Image 1 (cartoon, one colour):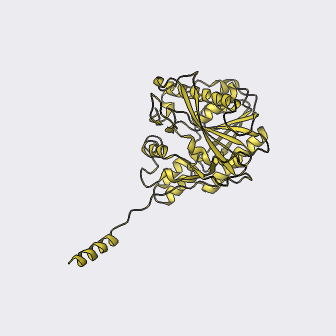
Image 2: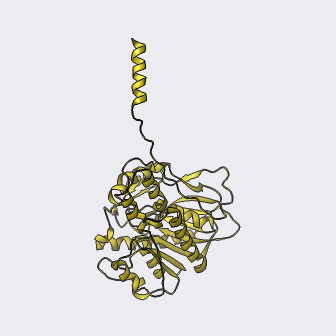
Image 3: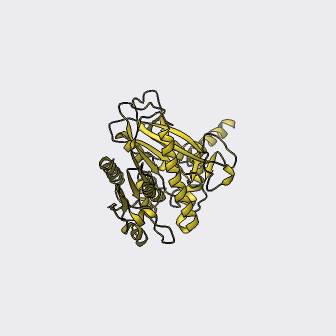
Length: 365
């Protein structure tokens, strides 16, 4: 009797549908001659208070420094997101910022980068510095692939989170006024609220200048050429990159990846009103072009403008390769994919963005 029951139970278990394993998105490898190391830095500016939460009392910034490595032997590939940040990403970003992303079926914490945590820096020369600013609500971790590509070609790339703005920022320690994993004050497009947009851009420009100050003080063990500094950013990060170029003479060149150069009220930012005397690239897509974007970009003096075809707004981020994988796994619709990154071949899209950004900085720095 017991044997018949056991056999029946095993048969039922075998016939039952099995849970589909969660998809682990893969990032494309860098193509340059250098292996890539990465170091995380927790920086505190005691001269400023946090613009979103005054109870904190200071301004905190998390950054990752991607750099050419002397060797990666004995070091492990770093995760794209730490587990706490990945959990918050799945609960918040896919609801408030990217509703087309699947709410289940993806293991965001499992994705590995092609950069090795703690790998020693290549010390054959001083490396020019590039600062990356993510879009409004996006974490710095979604700019990993392009940062690794640039680092593999001989740059020290500093990706910067803007806490309170980013969808999630995981800190190495606690502090009064925030959680260990801090979420965003945004619940949608910050351009829908002029005061929020103004605060975000001002904080981002100040964060950029603060990070440059700390790099100049030797905060990381990477030989940096701070006479050759560039900034690039996506969306609100592109806005801040262009404005930082205008305000800070230490920055020699910048790329604005589809960031508006005006406030939601129509008031032009100073960079658009007065122009720049150093290289600025305005790089956009045919899928995001609009009268609103053209209005501020069209008056920009002293800037180059380029456009990528069959692409959309988030093609400049890791979503360019991740979203097509999620569609192929049946977790996203073709419509949602097109809205985020466009309809073009993802391999071509990733290569095009990398080539345009690298070519610009090779000529400008």
